[in-house]
Every structure is written in C-alpha cells, then in structure tokens.
Image 1 (cartoon, rainbow, N blue to C red):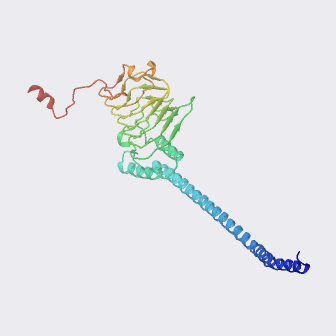
Image 2 (image 1 turned 120 degrees about the vertical axis):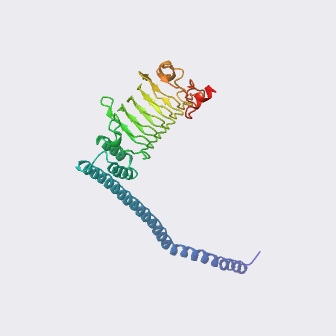
Image 3 (image 1 turned 180 degrees about the vertical axis):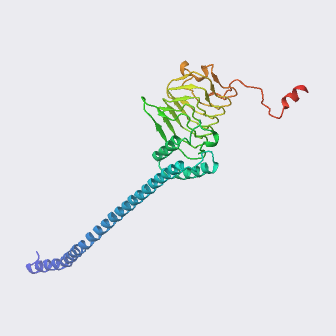
Length: 310
C-alpha cells in the first residue's frame, strides 16, 4: 500500500499538469471576450452599410423614376401645347404636306417616349383635331404608319360607346391593342400589324382591315357589315362570343389558317355559313381553300387573251 508521502507526490504532479491546461482555456476565453465587441461592431457596421447602400439605391431609383415621369409629362404637355398652337395658327394649312410632316415627326417622337395612357390621349387628341380621320380628304390626313401603339386600350361604356368613327390608323404597329365598347364605323386599319388585337362589343360597319397582319385576333359581340379583310392574315383568329353579319364581308385572298375552329360547330357563329361572306381564294382554317377565282390569275397586259387566241 503506497505511503501518504507517495500519494501526496502523485496528487501534486496531477495538479501541476492540469494547471497549464486551465490557464490556456482561460486565456482563450479572455481573448474571445476581448475580441467580441470588435466582432459585433464589425458585423453591425457591415449590416448598416449594406442597408444604407440599399436605401441609397432605392432613393436613386425613385429619383430616376420621378425624373423620367417629369420628362414624360413635359414631353406630353409640350406636344399638346405646340400642336394646339399650330392648329390655331392662321398660316397652318391642313393640306400642306410640310405642315402635316411637321406634326407627324413630333407625334412619332412623343409617341415613342410616353406611356400607354398618354399614347391613348395623344391619339384621341389628334383624332378630335380631325387629323386622324378617314372622312377627311386624303391630303389632309395625318399618317402614323410605323408608329408603335402596342397595348393601348380604347374602352367606352355599354351605355355610351367611345366615338372613334372614321378613325384613320393604317400601317401602325399595334400588338395587343384593345377596342371595347367603341364606335369604329368607317375606321381604316389597312396594312396595320395587330397581333393579338381585341375588338369587343363595338360597331365596325364599313371598317377596313385590308391586308392587316393580325394573328390571334379576338372578335366578340360584333355586327359585321361591309367590312374589308381583303388579303388579311388572320391565323388563329377567334370569336369571343356571337356575331351577326348584315352585309358583305370581304375575306378575299385572306389567310384564316387555324381560325374560328371553336365556332365551326355553332351555326350562328360560323362565319363561313353566311352567304354574304366572300372568301374567294382564301385559305380556310383547315388549310383548304375557298372558291378559286380563276380570272386574272395571270396579270401580264392581256397575256390570258393572247394565250386563249393561240
């Protein structure tokens, strides 16, 4: 059995060996506690700086949006004021091509810079000024062909149609344009590019869509009468609801591929069931062709007559 001296010696050695470990842990703890305020301050500073940068970016974005809105509003107001003054000027001549060109240039510039709502207001202003009307002499009409009128919405009310009769917009680019509860009697959209356009609950008597490009056109609750779709491309066109046809509708040479499929089985909505619909040389929804008009297929100064005589 070990003596008390030996036990005391062993216990003393154990205490001496564990003492450096305790001191080392204590020193590490002290170092961590000493560095903790600096670490917390650094994290706080970083987070605060990030928040400040985000706030600064948001403020700059807001300032930029306000500046853009101010410029847009200024461009719109200046255009209305300038054209109003020009129209009231005694020297202004509606049939002078230089005067109309001046308005066209200003209109195309401002229409390229303003938002959709102001574009609608500009078109309405020019229409009310008798510049965009098909019932005016040809040399007094303002041409906006090539102008981007995409996503514009002209919407009236069921009890009061928006009056746009004889609206003159040939050759415009008007993707997703919407006319709802509008009076479009006598309007002209010849050669316009109007994919996915919508014409709903509107009057379109004698309205001309000659050679328009309007795949995905939606028509709904309309009365068709004397409409010209000659040479129009109307792929995937559909009726949103019923239609009535009270006069000739010209679909000669039009392309109706995959159009009006949902209505083919409904007699009162099948456009080809109406005798007043002219679809000579038209490609129908199933890819077949309507009645082929064989006259004048060769246009060569009387070549057909020459061939017949020979």
